[in-house]
Image (cartoon, rainbow, N blue to C red; front, side):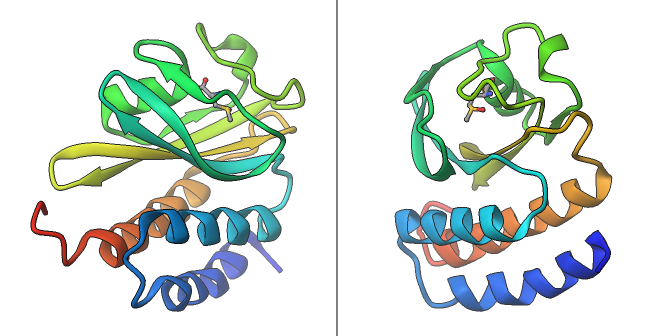
Length: 158
Ligand code: SME
């Protein structure tokens, strides 16, 4: 199965998994599990939630990770500041990268917007260099859109 075929299969599964549930922890937990168990060549998949000047660890699958990421440090915060998906083909060449698992070689971080605010990020690590491309970006951005719609659509803040 190609990556495009896999992602085409996963998107409807993700939509039905999150449909009708608005609890962010439950939805992040199920998403982390679906991504970790279906994507190839990854060693960590999970969330950080923004709490003012820190990103705090949310539901994830993989080895235990850094709990609090300080502003202006690392890949996750860079994606928050840019408000754009960040693909890092080689984490060793990214100044300030925070290594939670020494196996990680490449990383993708997708910001999660609630209204106009960056609410958190989806972070995925791979033990393989240059693991993530535009196809992964498109799939993960759609995944985050499904999460935002399910979790926040009925919120008054959006
Ligand atoms: N590498 C991230 C930290 C989180 S771990 O990858 C799970 C960063 O540099 O922000």
